[in-house]
Picture 1: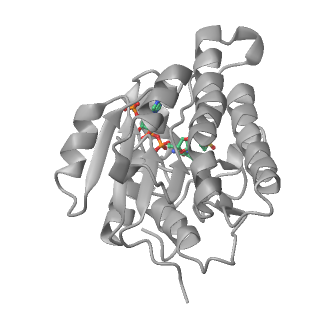
Picture 2: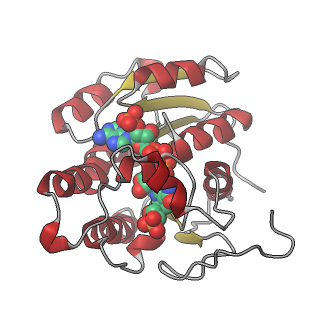
Picture 3: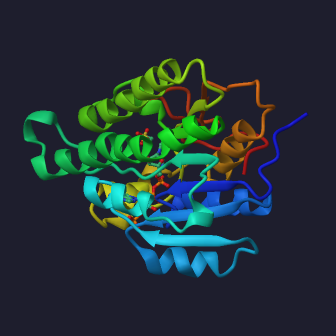
Length: 259
Ligand code: NDP
Ligand code: 8X3
């Protein structure tokens, strides 16, 4: 027996693009009600208009602790009982040797990927404990399992997500609240465009010669984790394109059967 997400309230951070937007579509197709946030509210509203489920969209920068607390405490009553939180908002900035890194990029990654994720979790998890139900799904990365050159800080932020997921699971032990990490390899989204500060040509090269994952591939796994029976907790899923064997080993030639 699977867990139905129909009519459940699913809160997805960073739903304006890529994996977050794909998660919104996947949960909508399963009949969930969607709480969607990101900084680009116009994008959220455009997507919500195409989804045939109730959606509540709001602009939020997860780096802003006070804004996170105010937004979540101030949700309309009918949106307060969040069943599933998908902590997806995140980014990479730069791909550079640490001793040459732009510290503004460093701050943005740490503040978004670690502190932002914790602020949102801190605001949502108490309600789940009080209601004695809920599921927190963090989007980690293969980068949290293995470091690659020029990516020390981004990899460290995703290693932090891995630790936070494991620690949260321990801290919520004794409650029915579930905690999962979904950790993808290369996914073609706006991720690399953001990493390279808008350099679309350079971003395209990241996925050249292979069939990367899509946001939909990741959303499919997130939905799978969310729909297991209530006594089953999927702790961690690592998913990669077949052409990717590790954080650093990528085959960039055609593979039979893969278009
Ligand atoms: P995208 O750039 O396509 O999407 C990132 C999303 O995060 C956007 O919706 C963006 O919204 C949101 N976001 C970024 N910063 C903030 C912020 N300060 N406050 C609120 N929302 C924010 O990239 P992906 O979909 O690929 O990335 C989603 C997650 O997946 C990230 O955590 C990333 O680290 C992780 N990941 C990505 C992989 C990949 O190869 N693409 C692989 C493994 C993990 P907005 O700009 O409107 O605020
Ligand atoms: C994103 C995947 O390998 O570009 O987390 O870091 S990678």
